[in-house]
Length: 454
Ligand code: FAD
Image (tube, rainbow, N blue to C red; front, side, top):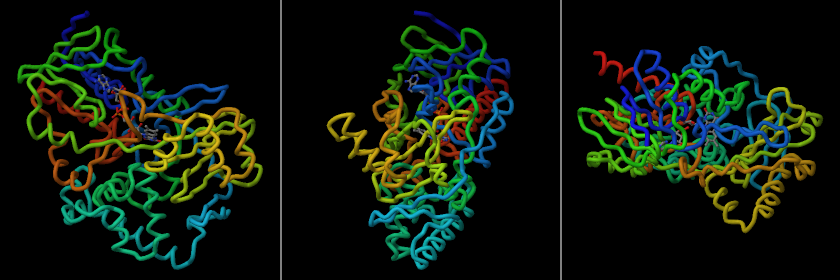
């Protein structure tokens, strides 16, 4: 067992913990980062599969994500644009695949009008919200005590419009069914991205990717930490704390420090035993933050065959097994990669199938219903399974259950003595994104520096 003494110990080497460690060490503080896994990056993770680069976790960056942009500029990381040329495919509820151009789904004019009405309503609510303090929205309590599903139906009787709008936030972002989270949580998602318009515009929200891959951002930050700072394979399961400081117990490293940055997802706070226990309020709060569930499907082909057919690879199918597909070919690769998303209850169905072969067959068939027969025969097929990852337990991120955001949110970022919580899932701008993780890492570091030096 190695016993270390540092100014600050950081638990978790995802983008938030690493950013905090980087800022603190640049400011001259001694830091140790204890990470449970054998790699950095957390929910960002890249593997090579048969020559193709597969981003198993987070990957896209949008223009509003200036926290992450400023970090990659400092690190010298460049970005590339997602392939966006060509027509898209929309699959109707009846199962018909329609090729279309432009921003509007090819649905009845009256449904387009209803969708635009709902988008405008969400834009207005998002504009009234400070994403750092969603609980201060003038209608916070009202919006937090109605599910997004019912909120949409209270504002429109067009079921297709409600399903299509629901897709962007429920299946597409929070990865929970729209009846499982509040309208306030949905408005926060929009407000954190600047507006609902930004969120529904796939060319904005899924704009660019890192040339290093998104995990590469964490790898580059880790390289810049002083020696003897990062300790992999060191899950912290015990944390002693008092006003004087903390002792964090990893597998083979123990760190005594003045402060701790707890940079793990909120659903994992209870994985650690605290001595003394955390106060009542935090113990209760942490039970109301839960992970969504989504499967990211990767299928790699000899060529991006859809491009030859004038298609961008972008497909939408609310209420279908695979509800979104995009061209996910990595920069410079000649093979073609598609990524599809299977969210919440649809993901449950896929995991309940008996075998990997059955899953592959069912999922590829669902993708072929958008893009045709050629989709059935990839050279690589991979399902991201963050639900089975002990140190994540779901995807993409955590959010509150109904009513939790205005009840528990106001204190979610308060420190408990020397313990500072830092996660993308507690961010305002960049909420549930790498950008939010970076912002929270910087904020935690700044607050600790003010305490230590102030
Ligand atoms: P994490 O990345 O979860 O890092 C937390 C770290 O803590 C992990 O390394 C974990 O191993 C470690 N840990 C946990 N418990 C312990 C413990 N007890 N002791 C020590 N270490 C511990 N974001 C985007 O911006 N764009 C996207 O396109 C995007 N797509 C996504 C797709 C998927 C499939 C997933 C899962 C996420 C996606 N995200 C995306 C979200 C993004 O990846 C997260 O918001 C971001 O990684 C959160 O960073 P973090 O540092 O807060 O937490």
